[in-house]
Image (cartoon, rainbow, N blue to C red; front, top):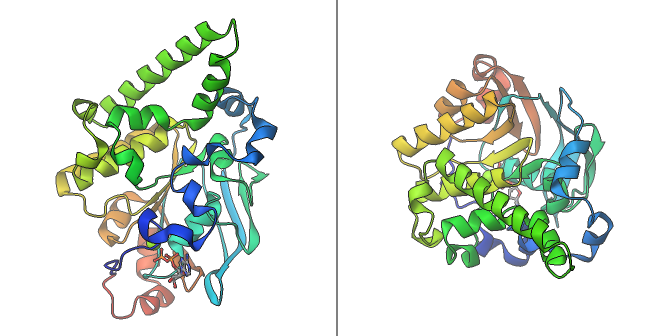
Length: 310
Ligand code: ADP
Ligand code: MG
């Protein structure tokens, strides 16, 4: 399979005004100040986490459709992801994988279809609202964040908490609570940096990191929002073998801790060696589902990848 072409969705710069949601959604921090923020302004991330109900199928996508003008990027995709699984989402270039991720996480508003997370219909919610429910995707580090340090990037990731801190900071009597919250946030940021073994880079500008280090930071940022489930869109692209192994090890560690992952990756060996279940997309819908061996030997899948390595 080839993924040589730049992915328009993942590139915040190229992406620009394609969808009005994209600008804010390119980073969950920037998405914090919408008018639609108000209804849940009192819901702290902790309260939101407490409300979560365990489900064996945290993510269910039904009849998802996304059109961009005349282009149908996603065309009736339906699938489920089991709790605690590391599920692969594959398909030839242009199959609609990134658009599916963007529809699930609120970056794009689906044209049709429903997305359920933990049994709740989350279709059409904004990225930060979905993140608060525990479902996040990684984003490339936006330009403005490149100029901040790695530690600052992590401190800014859980935008909900920071937004509330700002309110409390001007409320007499609550300053102590703010200090406590900031201290906890800082501790969590350091723990996350250590977990990904990038703590030695804490004070480096994010823009100075190597491609692989940046991928680690992107995943670290996603984890700072305290998710249940993380969508990873080609997290290993441009990552050297050593860092690739480290990233995969961290994913397996997190999975052992109960996190659920949906992984888009073009390297079929990575998918086969790491994912217990694979969903194959083709021309915007789901072509096949099964174990790595099942899909590798599936005639329809082989045909969809005709001319590409499988
Ligand atoms: P994949 O991630 O599987 O390679 P994408 O979801 O990026 O596929 O793209 C699916 C199709 O939708 C492609 O034909 C792509 O050109 C098109 N597409 C994706 N995003 C946009 C957009 N913002 N505007 C117009 N077309 C888009
Ligand atoms: Mg893509």
